[in-house]
Every structure is written in C-alpha cells, then in structure tokens.
Image (tube, rainbow over all chains, first blue to last red; front, side):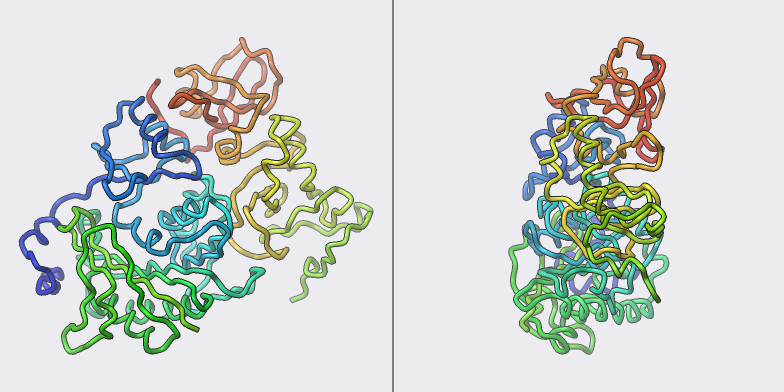
Length: 302
Length: 190
C-alpha cells in the first residue's frame, strides 16, 4: 500500500494532495544575505539571463525557471543557496537575533543552519550539530561556500548533547529539524517511500522525542524552540510535541505561518494529543506547491 | 587525560622556541594576541594575521576587530565571529581564512570571497572571458599585469560592482587559478 494513503483522511482535498505529490518540485534558491542582497542577486541573474520568479511571501526566495542553481555567477559567489521553499519556514518561526546563541541539533547539510546565520547577520553563535561525519562535511562545505563565520560545528548525539566545549551553559533558541520518515520530500525523492515502514516511524519517533527534550532543557527559560519535520506522520509530529509538553517545561506558542497550512491534529488512531498542538502547522504539498512539512513553536517556561 | 593546553594562563611570556608546545592537530587553539604571547610552536599571532591582510591587500584591521582567530592542524587558520574557551575539540569553528605553513601565506578561497571586497591593493580585475577561465580553475597568460607577484585577489564586475572571484597566484606572466576543485564551475562570459 502507498504509505501516503495513510494520511489521506487528514487531507481536505485528496485528489489535489496525490496530484501534487506526483509533480516534481520547483527549483528554489535563497539569497544569502551575508554575501549579497535580494536586489543584487536578482540583478546578477538578470545579467546572466537566468529566469526566475519571486516567492510572494519572502523576497529572499526565488523560484528558478530551470532545474538546479549550481551553474550561475551569483551561485559561484555564494550569493545563492538551493533550498526548498517550505524549508525556509522553521528559521523564520525561530526568529533568531544577531548576537544570540542558537542550537541547531540536526544541522547537516546546512540550508536551515546557514539561514539562521544570515538572519543573525553572522553575529553571535550558531552551534550546528549532527551525528554523521559525511553529512557534517556537507554542512562544512556549504557554510564555507556561503561565507558563514559564526558557526560552530559539533558531532554529538543530540539526545544527550553537551555544552561543555563552549563558554556558556544555555542557548537563547534551538531548532530541531528532526530526522524523520520524509514522506514530504516525495516530490524531490520519488523513491523515498520505498523504504517506508511503520516500525521505522515508531523508532524514529523515540529519537525525535529525545532530541526535542534535550533542546528544551538546553534552552533558557523564556527561550524559543522550533520543531520541524518533513513527514505527515502524527507519531513524528503532534505526538512528539505532546510528549515534551508532558515531560519538559515548555508550552506551544502560536506563530504566523506565511504559507497556507492546516492546524496540527489532536487525534490519530487510538491516541489523543494536547489541544495546544492545534497551534502547530501542517503543510501539505498541494496547499502552496511545495514539499510537505510540519512546524511547531515552543516557549521554554522554566 | 592530561591536556597541556588547558594549563593556559593566558598570560604572555617570552618563551624560547624549545619551550613552546607542539600544535595538536585535532583541536582548535586561539591565536595569541602577539608573537610575544606565543605558547605553541610556529603558531601565527592574531597581530600577524591582521597585519598580513592589511599589508598584502590593504584590508583595514578594523574589518577583523570583532572576530577571533584559531589554528587547527599546522598552519590552518580559521576565523570565528565570536569567542570560545581554548583549546577546543570540535569539528568546525567559523570559516577557514589563511594558510601559514609555507613562507608565503595564502588566504583561502572563502576568505577572499567573504572579505575581498575590503581589499584596496593586489586586486587584479579580470575581463569577462578571463573571469570565466579563472572560475573553471584554469591558468592563463596575463603578461599585462605589472603589479606584485604572488597571491592576488582576482575580481570581476557583477551586477554593477567589483566582486572577488578567488585567489590567484601570479608568476612569470601567468595567472594561476587556485579555485578549489569543488568550487570550480563552467560559467557564462558576462
């Protein structure tokens, strides 16, 4: 059975949902404001005759007419970075400020991490962690290419992350863009569902709970934690939020989602979740012609 | 595990070269403020690094005021936007900025792309054809350059302004491209 069938009852327009999942994803780039401005990046693309359209909700995102951002002068200069439109959302929800200390628990390959650095004007500290050396090397390469200087790269298990290497003992903000079942990336990786199993959903859900718990613990009271995935599975989304609401000092806070979204679900199969998960956001591919996504914003209360 | 660098007092002492510790490759150590503060063999000082960029490229020391400088691996210098306790065993701390192992220090490709706009000398302006050749990683004859030999910042014009392309090595009428393999690209002649 197509695993997407599992989520059809959650979706308002079944046909549009399945159609969108079949279509390839538009090629989107983010302007790296550490190195350029949207105006200058557009001027450079114009000079080179590369066609694009602006994404209406964010002037730093451009949809390219053709596949792949890799062969243009502004890309060579690190002014542009290939990043799916919907994946720009968690950093915007986190809203990091210059000079702050921010933890990105699952950072590689670094699209969101380098976006955090850019939003902070490359000041303060972004700690980009991942547990896989190969993926860390992609993170390092991307950060270097984009001219990021405020990134600390660590290789730890996010579930028991230690702040010992640093001169501080809590973060202002944290982002957990968790490893997940990735059904939402089907438009980019059509074979993503081949390896899908319910068993994996359950095992990865336990890891997600562990990392998000650690993120809440490592963030100062009053600080913000954003949780995101590219899966539709409530076990990996609302259930993870529900778990930390019960075990850690935090609460869900509402945020304005610049993309059309649907509220988080409070019931799934035999489970019920805290009603505040309705303030989290589900994004289905047909709503904005993007990948699928889930994003929740938490405030640390103690 | 005993770790000699954790005994750092941070106080500068005029040490003899044989009293200095060896650099440890797997961790980052902050550069000493000046060579008089040096406690690790062969390690460049912050002052020397900032002075190098000023002397060679005319980049004002103020540009680097808010950054810290680190060494990981012999002669590999990194630049970090904040500060951190030293030494530290992590995978990355900011961005690579300079190689000091050879007699002639070499800025990195990323350093020149990030900070090269502040340069006022030893910048070579390339024509659209020359810039495309350079970005592909190819060497080219360029006898018309009558400036210094050695490492230069290669630049071209993009979107109405000068933009650094990468690090060039100029010797014997030839402009060599040092654009790293992973960054080389066949781009259009603008």
